[in-house]
Image (cartoon, rainbow, N blue to C red; front, top):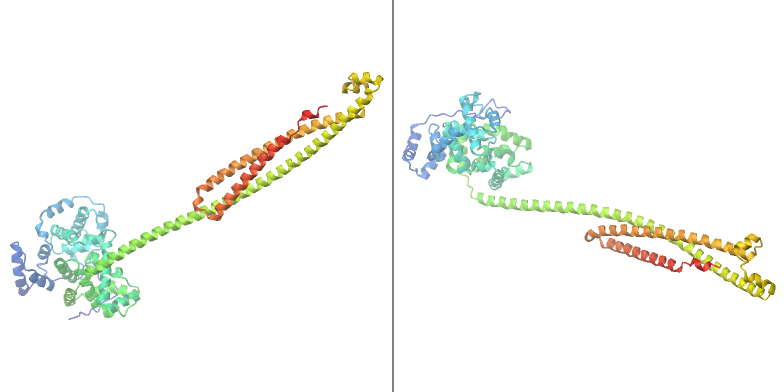
Length: 525
């Protein structure tokens, strides 16, 4: 193996499109490909083993365009070329983005260097046509590098056909779908291949926090066309069109094995810089590129399917974990809302209890005051009854005594003791004056009794209103009964029973007052 030393290397990355590829083909190579080309010309398939050997050794640059077309079987569908001519006439929403990207595609190659030149125009037409054709994928950055690689070997119509085959038949478009989910699968498989075949480098990357997506995502999305020299890119395309996209794993592992010694000596930042700057420069020599492709084709990929199943199992487990996490978050949110509602209800309960306590205290005070008034009223009534009975006894005794006197009997028989006569005559006895005082006192007591009854009615109304408000609150709390702890339910039940008993006692007391209220007519003399 011969390694070319470049004295002018610096920290600048290799410009894409670097590397001149000679189209010269010696007689031995042409003779080797003669039988294959003849069979293809007669619509026959060449022997697979013979074709594989020739392709892996490298397709001559002069024949590469035709061989690529036939390897992709793009020559079997001439209608695609007519489709392309129609597509380039249609408008594309991402035309501005494509126009900006083509200036950064293979700027080191003369065919694409000139702005507005044939190369850039063809690249724009090809990329736009595919974006219009495949509306699901549309245009993605990196697609221009693959399109430019094809345009260097064939007309744009044929390049469109090969691009469609790569995207649809080879499965490259799956890389750009579903949020690049297929790319994540490929990166997982590459990581497992590294663990299996390059364990020291795998452990070194893990120790430095290097993940596969940091350096290999572009490899898979552009088929190594973005950064590496063209002759290395073309050799990769040869094998990809022959074997399929699994070739990308072989090339990636071969590159990592080739650069393992350098990478093991670097830290995080320098590893990333090595992938971006140094690694593409390591394969600027065609002999190195040829040797790498040979090593890549010898790498076995027997466990790819197993790794895919592992990835799908991990993805399913991750989705399940995410679902559980989502459900847990929802439960936490529900719990938080429940706790907030519980706190709110507890605060509301405390507020209602305080209001109820105040109202009960106020009602008790009013009841005690009313009971005191009633008690005093009853005492007064009893005293007045006693005084009235005493006065009647005195009057009866006087009547009996005066009745024995003949002279006084005539006065007894005439209403001389009426209040009007006594007042007019000015001969008012002490008993009559006392009786008038008692009548006046009875009138005052009747007024006071009426006022007391009115106060009792107002108190009863307030108690009924409080009971109604308390019932509403209990109804609201009953709706969340299942979420309340047992102690809180017990407290609410106790409050309700106390309130009910208190209301019943008040009603019985009011009924007792009405029954015990004296008849004012009994005070009439």
